[in-house]
Image 1 (tube, rainbow, N blue to C red):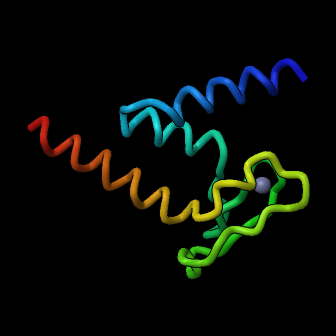
Image 2: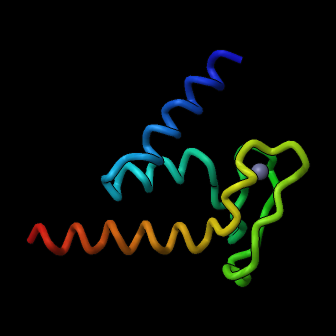
Amino acid sequence: MTSNSVTDEIAAALRDSMSPRDRLAGWAFRWSLQCGQLVCVQCQASQSANQPEASFVHRPGCRSRREDKPWQELEMLLGAVAIRSSMRR
Ligand SMILES: [Zn+2]
């Protein structure tokens, strides 16, 4: 699907960006938070917030499956954005 591949390209560009804010935006393209569950937007598999160390289990055939610790990635990205913001003051 064309619209899907454009979205993928945007997500990939944001993911590879050096800016923590862009990388956080890229993360938000791939994951959503619903009622304390982190949900893969590709396959709708979910993981609870109380198991951030556990590897994320995607459904078979999911294109995002290589990213297996999204809670830790989010924590790292939020930390990077916070550090960047405090340096600017
Ligand atoms: Zn998935």
